[in-house]
Image: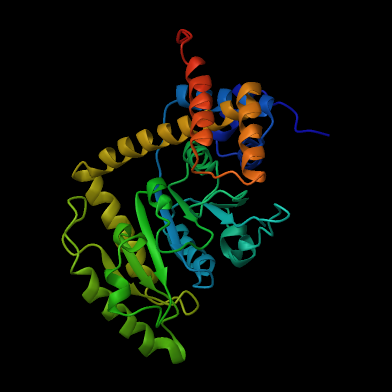
Length: 345
């Protein structure tokens, strides 16, 4: 049995009241690849927009696999919930490149948040989307905000040096590193480190305490070499050490998150960042539409098959024939854009 199409007006109203079942149903609808489900999801989002946009503080947390992201989110979220805040977590889990399946096990490390009345945890597969996030991260975050959560926390799969896309989904971006996870030279490298608002050296406890403090000191020295960003108050980005297991250093992280978000709101950088994010999200949707258009075009698929046959028989991907075929696909897509734009209802 497929997912039944909902009454989107009622579903939107239920989401606005914080109904968790309605929110879960909406996320499932949104993540479905069926065209009728996608149309219903678009109607739902439009209904939520008409009800008035709500905003939450979006906090993205990234870092290498095994650095303790899930445990840290559980500890930070519990701390914020203890201050009467509501928390929604999107835990992104990697999908198998062979089977396409996902374990979706991050929620098991967030026991306190999963059972807290003011918290909601949603595991979601990447479905082989790159950048440490899912194809529908933007839309899921939007649903969380319209459900009235104060904070939306996004846990990535565990990304590398150059995968910075998650910073485009957040107001505050935390990069977690392990003790002895790199010397000063690692801190100077461009990529994910230079877009982070905080570098948190986790596992600063027990036998790893001295190593964690040394790592934090090394990253702190490296970050001071960066050009100051206008969207940062004095002293940011920060390098902090903490232990999610022993729950030390968590209050400082929570306070810094709140301070940075408020400072950016008061100085206009919050709205500038949201505007920039919306434009990037628009262009991401445009790229998705173009890819889908090529997939649905019979002519484009015929041309693609010709290119594949040429490569399979020893042709070069850099040859002029492939280039000509690509131009044919480009013209095919462009011809579909010549029809008049639909009138806004």
